[in-house]
Length: 77
Image (cartoon, rainbow, N blue to C red):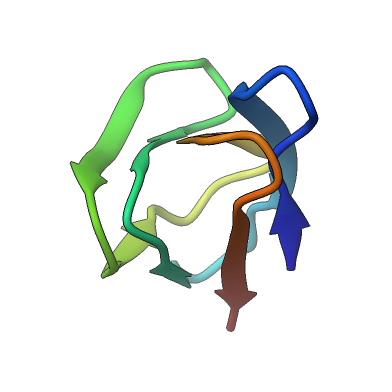
């Protein structure tokens, strides 16, 4: 779980990429963005969804947007 800080806005998280695509399940009412290791947007949306991080090496990144104190669930499989 990720909690949006007291200022609101966004929280950043790193996601390890793998030799096979990685499934990322996001449960939120806010917006989100998923970037590959080269910081190219691979998925984005608003609300809950399932996104796929393409196979690769290195860390990918997520930006999770929300209201102060909002809790967002992220599951990486």
